[in-house]
Amino acid sequence: MHDSRRTRLVLGVLLIVAIALITLDFRDGGASPARNVGSDVFGPIERVTHDVTDPIASLFDSVTGGPSAQSTRFLIRRIGGRLRSPVSGSGRVAI
Image (cartoon, rainbow, N blue to C red; front, side, top):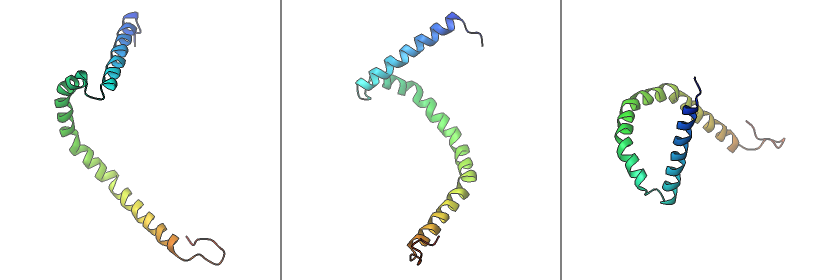
């Protein structure tokens, strides 16, 4: 990447604008006009992006997270059941 003075200037200006917008939003408790404009501009884009990616994310979660979550729940129940069992004579919990 070619680092030039112009690139640093643009980055600095964008950083100052971002800090100013965050400050305005924080000061108004989330009811600033900047938030409303941002919501109006980026809201439809966000909704379309969510509608497109949600089925893919759900499929990925069901493939990767489903069995793992079920096995974790089974393991927790198994350990919980053993922890409820009587304490052995040595003073240790039988796991």
